[in-house]
Image (cartoon, rainbow, N blue to C red):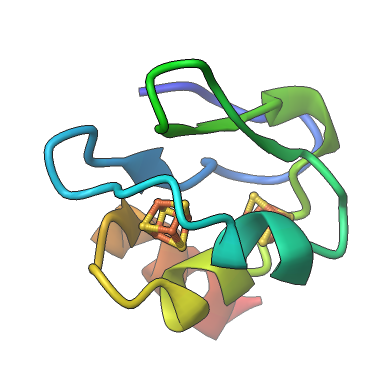
Length: 76
Ligand code: SF4
Ligand code: SF4
C-alpha cells in the first residue's frame, strides 16, 4: 500500500480488473493517473488528493480506496 504524505492513502488499482480504459485518467482532478504500456492505470501518489472519484467512475471496480481511508474521511 502506498501512503500519500499529504492525505491518507491512495486508491489501489487491481491490475487484473483494469482494462486501461482511461475513464479515471480523464476524471482525476489531480491529473495524477496515467495508463501504462500494459494498459493498467498507474497513480502518482504525491499528487493524489484522495478524493475517490477514480473509484466511483471505474466501470470495472478496479480502483478501490482502502476501507479505513473512507472511515478517516467520515471522521474529518
Ligand atoms: S483519488 Fe482522486 S486524485 Fe487520487 S487518483 Fe483517484 S481521482 Fe485522482
Ligand atoms: S477507470 Fe478503471 S478500468 Fe478504466 S483505466 Fe481506470 S482503473 Fe482501469
